[in-house]
Every structure is written in structure tokens, then in C-alpha cells.
Length: 147
Image (cartoon, rainbow, N blue to C red):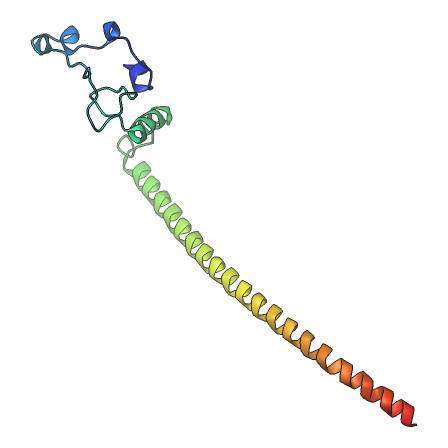
């Protein structure tokens, strides 16, 4: 079963048959893959009758590798109250940090918009300064020449 779930091709002689493990399943005939592909499946694709959801398989292996989560059931009343109090404190702290993060992201967005606006203004002022500097320098040269 492990090889099959891993996506490997399993020989027919190695197939798991329900009748091998229980007496109730001994009367049920084993399901075999169809010999001819259906019109919706290409002939090059061979797969089992049971669909595999790879997301669920990934979650199963992830859950098996995780350590056990501590429970409140085995604690006495004082320990349980302390555990719940600490859990509430941590939840409150997390909520505060999340709201601070949202506020900081909003501030960053506003500052970026202001920076873009100031860059546009600086560019416009620079163009106006250049446009005024040429006539001003000509005017200064005329005044100096007339003295």
C-alpha cells in the first residue's frame, strides 16, 4: 500500500486484496483496474480505481511528524487556570502585535505615497528652475553689458 500511495506501479501479484485480511471481505471479489482505458483517460495513464488526494496524503505525513500538543485535561484546577490565563495573555499579545503590524503597514504605504508625491514635486520644481535660469542669465548678461 505504501508503494502504491507513493505513486509507484505495483505488480498485480502484490496487490492488497480485502479477502486476505478479514473473513467478511473474503466473499467480495477483488477490484481490478480496467483493461481498456475509458474515453476520458488516455491509454498511457494507468491508475488505480481509488483516487489519491495528494494534499491529504501530505497532511497525514505532516501530522505524524508533529509532536503531541499539550492538553489541559491532565492538569489540576490551579494548573489549568494558570494555563488558560497564560493562553489568554499570549492571545492578547498576539492580537496587539497583529494590530501594530497593520498600523505599521498602513504607515509605510502612506509614507511611500508621500515620497512619490515629493519626488514628482521636486522634478517639477527642477524643470521650472531650469526654465527660469536661462532667461535670468540672459537678463543678467544684458544688465552687465549696459553698465
